[in-house]
Structure formats: C-alpha cells, structure tokens
Image (cartoon, rainbow, N blue to C red):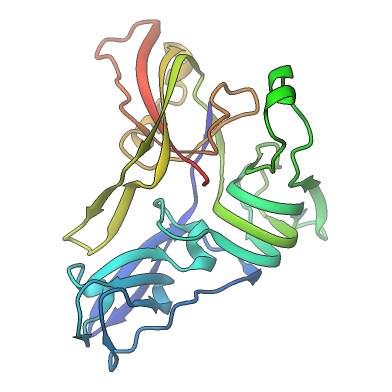
Length: 315
C-alpha cells in the first residue's frame, strides 16, 4: 500500500485588522481552461438571506448564509451566520478536506505544477477524454523526463466476470507513481475537451509494507461535520454516499519500522492513500483517509490489526 503526502500552502487575508487563513494543496504555477465560481463576491453593503452564497476571493472559498437579513458580517468571522462551504470550483481539487459541492470542471484545461522532489501524481474522481502528461527538466533546456498520453475510456477487462457482467466505463482514477524525482522539474497536464477533477494530489510515494486480507465492504449515507470555534473552519469528515472498507492488516515489524516516522502523519488525519494496480480494494474510487488503526504496545515481529478505510463514491 502506498500513500502520497500532499504539498500544502495557506491562503490568507486581513479584514478589519483580523487575519483569516485556510490551508489548501500547493497551487500550480498556472491553470488554464478551468471554470471559476458561479457565486458572487462578498459585498459588505449587501443584505443576505438564508441560502445565499458568496465568495471570499482572497481565500478562494464559498460561504453559505444561514440567517436572514445578514449585512456587514464578514463570512469567515462568524460560523453561526456563514457556513464554510469549501473552496471555489477551480480550487476545490486542491482542498485539504473532502468538500461538499461540484468537482472542478473545465474544457481544454492545462495545469502546470512545480514538481520539485516529488515522484507521484494522483487524480481522483476524474472524468476526462484524453490527458497528456509531460515532466520536463528546468535545468537542462526543458529535457523531457517523462511523457505519457492517457485515454479516459476504460476499454479493458481484468477478469472474465468483469467482461461478462460489468459495463464498460470511464477511468475515474489516474495514478502515476513512476515519475522522476528531480530537484527542479515541471509537470504539465493537458486535458482534451471537457474534464472534471475531484481531487489532485502530488507527493512522494512511500512503502508501508502492509498486506490486507479478510476485507469487508459496506455503504453508508451520513456526514460528520466539525465546526472549529478557534479558527471558524468547517471540516467534513464524511459526506454523502461513502464506501467503508474494513480490513485485517498484517505487516513485518522490521520493514514497517523503516517508515515509522510517517505513522504520526497518518493516524487521525485526512491522509490520502494511493492504491496500486494490484491492491484488492481497487473497487473504491478514492481512499480519503484511515480510521481506527490499532498499534500494539509490544513489538512483535509480525503484527496483525484492524483498520478502516473511508472512501468517497462518485455518484
């Protein structure tokens, strides 16, 4: 099992001498062809009622009004009046938490990313026709380090059962874990025609050396929304129709300890797991985060435990 740790940055703004900020994935150098938000910018002189949406452009975020006759209340300052509804459309795929709302959509989109010291790209919950990926060396006259063209149509079958009974569909997840680790390179993604992207993740791939077996899969329709009174943020831990995969895990302690320093970054956080082609839980469109990971207090050579993986289902 592998995971990619996203690169992040904080968007911030100051209003009435108070600073507000939100964390997002590191923004690409350029984004062309991606649609912006359909909602208007916030205007302190306007009166808003329940159900009105506004955008704070500096934070690239949408807020939904929850009380009538609201005027002059800056949305990030009062979570009781303004519900944080997530990043605007063109930034949603770079958000840290799962977001309610549409995916990022556009036509003939081109995304250019600074790909320093990374080797993994994951595009999750994606609908596209054609994608051209190119990684170039900025220190050597844009020498091409990696290049691939990917079709969005899934025309193959991995088993006789799939061939006989499953409908052919579109690829909803693109994972490239064989890109070149390079101190100064650029990654360009060119989409042909219409594209919809749920989440884009870049990072370094790590091996955790885990084996999953005895898995069970169930579906849930529920949400868990956490509102922070400290920084007035709203986090959606689960939402909509999700797949919950419970698995027994076995791993060799010596191999696992090689990545022990990463455990603190995994447990209790929305760490995105990137499945490989051979993983047994590839029926999930995306693995959003781990829940319930029990570590024994002793240190046996082989550890067996239970984990729960929460995955978002594309409707």
